[in-house]
Image (cartoon, rainbow, N blue to C red; front, side, top):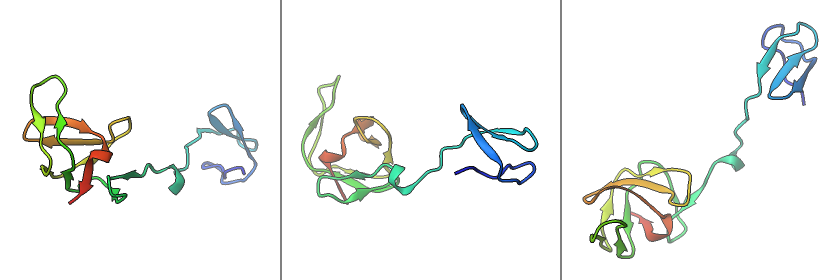
Amino acid sequence: MSNACPQCTLENTYPDGDNYVCADCGFEWPMVAEVEESDVRIVKDANGNVLQDGDSVVVVKDLKVKGTSSTLKVGTKIKGIRIVDGDHEVDCKTDLGSMMLKACFLKKA
């Protein structure tokens, strides 16, 4: 499970803390977490469709906007969403301003 050394290209390497070390030439380089498909976050809308950056969505329920007396009405179309980490998975811009929304209140347009 060792990686080839980027300097001498030999396979005699080992992990040491957050780095790999080459036993032959002594070169050290940082471990880079390899992204696997299982590591990619999958966000689904209210109907189970997978949402991606840039998608357009429609609000499926009236949502009160925290800190204001405004409401984001059912049927409001939102274009160009961004998927982010956290409890509220969708970052978007609406007529009421920028906000974060939960995907369970949205459906893909």
